[in-house]
Amino acid sequence: MSELPPLKVYYDGICPICRRDRARYERWAREAGDQVTWCDVNEHDETLREKGVDPQAALLSLHVEEEGGRIREGIDAYILLMRRVPRLKPLAWLIGLPGLKEALRWYYDRWVRRRLAREGRLP
Image 1 (cartoon, rainbow, N blue to C red):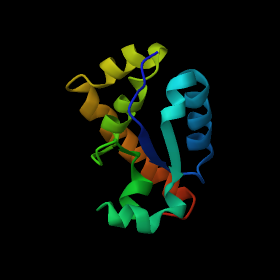
Image 2: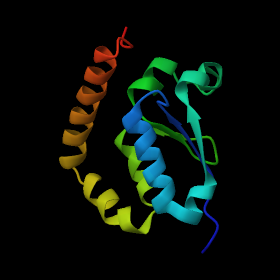
Image 3: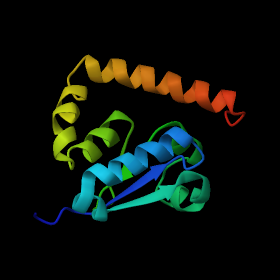
């Protein structure tokens, strides 16, 4: 397997669903998962600010930093991660389709805001 460039994933480590998704990704990614560093946004406020990312925005949407420092967020971040896992590549292609991508973004954003509001973590 060719070496993949490293990624840094900023995710909500307090969220049980997010932690479960991370564990599933690591299991499915196998060796590709070794090139992914997971950072809980709740513990990396200053690092995020230094990269020009508002910590609240990182809480509201998955952020992935590529090797060169480029940061992708939301559905684009998920697509980047999913493309590394053979069984998820077709899904990455599907969720990237115009129309579907925008609909998923809208749904995801609503779901995260409801979850954070329910937990009392949405200002």
